[in-house]
Amino acid sequence: MIRRAYLDGRWGQLHVRRAGQGTRLLLLHQSPLSGAMFDAAMPFLAAAGIEAVALDTPGFGLSDAPPAPTTIHAYGEVVGDALDSLGWDRAAILGHHTGAAIGASFAARNPGRVERLILNGVPLLTPEQLEHFKAFRFSPLLPEADGSHLIAAWNQRLAASPGWTDLDAMHRYVVEMLAKNLTYWWGFQAALAHDIAPDLAAISVPTMVFSNSGEDLYASSKAAHARRAEWVWAELAGGTHDIVDEQPEPWARVVADFVLAKMRPAL
Amino acid sequence: MFKCYADTAHGQVHVRIDGDGPALLLIHWTPLSGRMYEGVASRFPDRTVVAPDLLGYGRSDPRPADWSIEAWADNLAEAMDALDIAVADVAGGHNGANVAAELALRHPAKVRRLVLDGCPLPSPELRAAFQAMTGQPRPGIDIAPTVAWDRTLGLLKEYIPGFDPAADIEMMWPAMRDYLATDFVSSGAVAGAYDLAARLPLIAQPALLLGAEKDTLAASFAPAKALLPSARSHMFPGQHPIHFPDRAAEWAGVVAAFLEAA
Image (cartoon, rainbow over all chains, first blue to last red; front, side, top):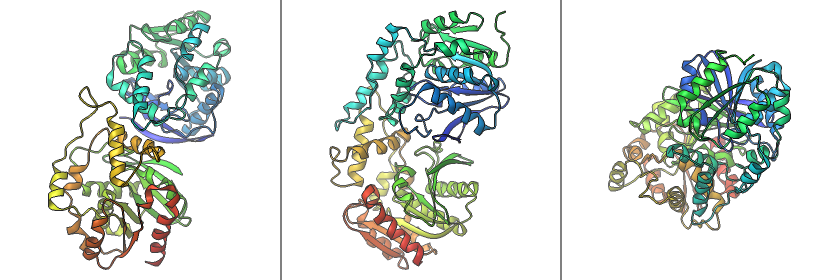
């Protein structure tokens, strides 16, 4: 059973979805979605004995937005606000895509507050990938009287989701984008302007890189793991960046095994 | 504006809260949400404005399929308990007026004064048509992909006669977000099953009936006054002011004057 709540943060209220009791895990979502992207996996995490809290990054979902476009490091500081507001000194953290950049930023600067870190799809982008993502229309989505901007939004997410299969998830995520029509692209802008490499080098907490072979950041994730070969590597077969909807139970099993320390970093 | 959830037996009710003082509960029109009162919330300086999203709308959990105006009223009473609000002045618009009236009747100790902003008093034929409404078709291969936009436009044209999407396009986004939040579940049958005309004469609290000349429920203004002759009343000129940010003070002024006088 997922319950929703608001926490306090530096830019206003932070919205979270939470389920389960036990080992604490904070979940950070990809752009331009919200903590709702973890809904399908929450019951499995809870059943495994995890207290999972999925945070809406400021400006996404129902969390209040920063006053202006901001940086991954600034979003990372908000992770500390969320932990404070939850009364959590420490927690495991999982970040997916943009959320992985935010989680890495926080973990690199606050190793004492991060039990374990899961980087789920690492945006360690090559110059070619940066060019690829720049081809997307990351700008405010302005309305047209005939509603044609809705088709544009639909087509934009289709183009950004090669190999997609889950129509219901596609609908929900386009709706989330429409709900933030003027600011949904701030997360992409922050992620594409950010170099995660220094944080990858600085992280000192037990870390797992987790990806799936069909997603757009699979090669980037492998490249990230290659920089820190002592970290755990896990992958699922196939899927896309909507892997949590596509394979919720296997995804949650990998996450729970690492969070509950059933896997150890290779010595 | 502070936001929170009130936990109830049927799910979480999302609530916007603003200000300090005695509680003023504002119940939204459907299929909109408490969002529609964001413009007026700051205009009651001596009151705590509390704007819930009815179950099934806005950011609240979906409502059960078997539902009624009475169930919404009971659910709001439960939400008031969860928020530690013992008694409130209550204002509701359109379908929200149904819920407000029923809250006043079923939980009289919780409702001090009542504002009914547009009373749905449909003809028997119209009520039957509402009751026959089931779910709206969801987007799919046979439905135009802009269905949410088209329905939102239809809704605003109904609520705001003469609505011009080109001139007022910024009103479309928030309304469409509210519409999408319903997940295409209509409350037409729930509203159609409720007979406000039979309930109005039973209201004992000090009451204010509001109407607007160009509101879709303008024709119900005089019949509602006849059914509740003790109530004060006010008819706004032209369009209903609640839809227009530049008329927020006008709406709030009339409500505040009633709350002070009654």
